[in-house]
Amino acid sequence: MSADIDNYISELCHTTTVAWLNYEIWWVYKSKDTRPVYVNVMNKYGLFFQTSIHAHFVALLLALYRLYETRDDTFNIPSFLKILRNESRLPETTLDLLEGIYKNEAKPLWIKVNILRNKAFGHRSVAHTVEEVFEEARVTPNELRDLVEITKKLLNKLTYSWNKNVHAFNLRSREDTLRLLNDLKKMHKV
Image: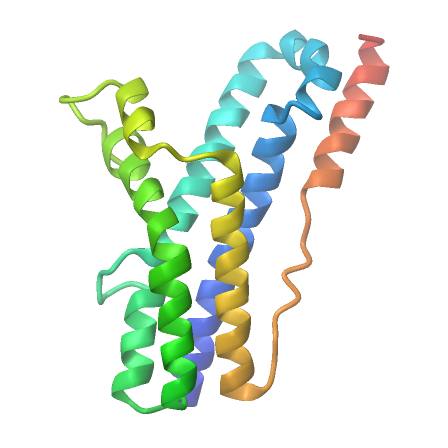
């Protein structure tokens, strides 16, 4: 059973890392701090960057959705917490803390991701425009970032309680993205 739990943790940490890497790339493209610096070079490759912005945003949403969906046949945090509680694999106080983080911090933000994924990206609702779906979700870029950070915290508390280990979550895509944009800018002197 320990190998199953280790595998579950590994899957959840991998998905969290994927969410973070996609968030960082998307946010370099969209942030008011970086976009103005690179908008001319991004416009030079307009279709590529439009597609890339969309792809990284959707990949972020799908990863965040996956982490908190409630199906019992997929790797997700709510199901994992149930497994751990049913099998008494962690102390009750730890499980209560983890479920509190999930219910009070992560779930309210995940509901917004759920709306976007289920009405605009994973499925395309005939009843609503994409603009209406975004209006309903009322999600901000900071909330997407926060959901990734909350997930990292939850997984590290879980892992520490399980085997006295934590995950660094230290892969970063921001610097590579900025280097790419700077190289393109120099190449085209835009």
